[in-house]
Length: 420
Image 1 (cartoon, rainbow, N blue to C red):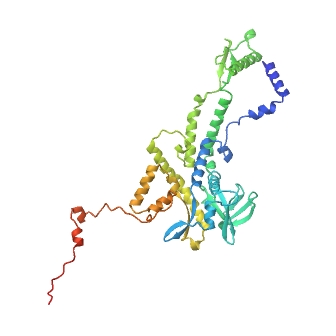
Image 2 (cartoon, rainbow, N blue to C red; image 1 turned 180 degrees about the vertical axis):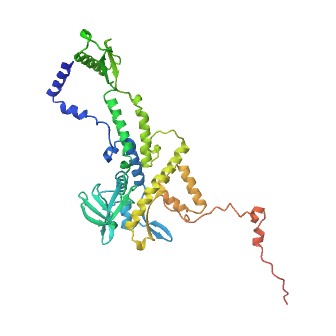
Image 3 (cartoon, rainbow, N blue to C red; image 1 turned 135 degrees about the vertical axis):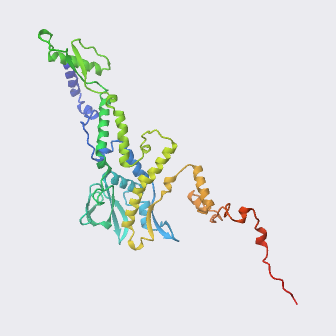
């Protein structure tokens, strides 16, 4: 048996297949696995999906620069800041990639830093600084930047850096990432994945010990180490070949050491770790395809909870930080930066028709405004506001069944006068 393994290894070395085998059959990491870095966390499906759904959803919302006009804030498309937020913040990124990577850094690294490049005091570019290139000194309220990728170096004040922090533990100066807070749960999930990989990669082979008969054997009946080793190699070879039942001499016994996935409850443990990771990210399990038993109403309420409990805090934090650093205090009452949330409320066509119809009937919108949302040209008379008049006060003549037509058309009575 040993000679066969030696011949096989000699043939592999002679054909130069050592590197090929090592590349395709890399050694598995040892247990336990500790997850502290972003790279390790993104190998977990639940963490990857939570990060993708959070960053993708927020990046799909247009971040608009608005100006007050007739007591209503409307998008100011002529300003350069509007183009920076909605089109191209810098020469490397589009607005979608800019916001998505900004959210990823804030969630998985705890802090996202954006450098405001100004020309004559006006913002001309928003540069997302590379991870690890910025440090914040909370005693002097300054940022030290050494970003060789974006060619930005120096010490900058707080007005030059947009600082987005995740949940903080030092009073709001720096943020703590989800990965750092959930490192224990993610380590459990990574260890379970690693054990599952080991189980499937080795074909589910059983591990055990071949031993002699019970009691102490003496004389010629005693088994040597070489004999038991030969039996063990034969059992391992036959199990690896696909056989399920292997015969062993009556004087020997086989004690199983390894456990099946069912014995270690890996499947149940993986389900629980997915839910725990969703709790840390604040994402509903439906978003990560956890397969929870639910109905349509529960799924709808999960969507509402996701919008109010998960997204809204992120959106408000981003809006307030951008307004604080990009809009001067002198004109802060006339300008604002916020997300267009209408993208989140996309529904089926019949629900949209009911929504537009209700707004039209209460005078909340005109026909041309509806056509503008649908991408259609305005029509003559479409700017008229309509209000449905099918209600009246409870004590009005209309409710009592009295007619007011004759009284309204009747001329007021005057005293008769004599004409001489």
